[in-house]
Image (cartoon, one colour):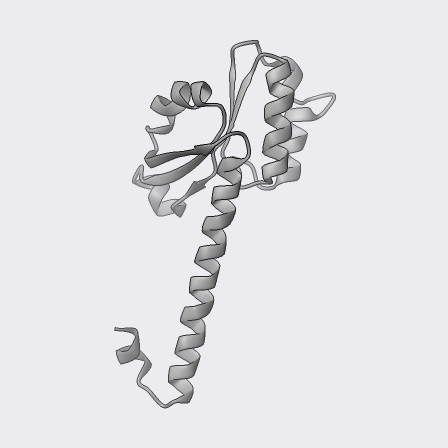
Length: 142
């Protein structure tokens, strides 16, 4: 898992140090970075030309989920590759969801982030409204 899509692109495709040209046919590339669906599709396409299976598999659940083996892994990739990688992914994931072809894991993570952020905004707005209305926020939260 890397920090940013640009990091993923560099690690995979850098002409001098990238892994794409060094992976053996039949290998699997699993990217857990929250990244771009387009980049996931590009990686899958390029790796397929080299005989390497690639899946995009961003996770949700944070540090606590990681420590407890309860992450949710949202997977995009070809069915056969995903099935081959599930035993590994299940070691740290409480739930693995194959959402479709390359990029689908990233699209799912983006959908998840949108739902989380709008829920947080709604919660903040509700608390502000309650405060302005003179409500006891500790009771309102309960």
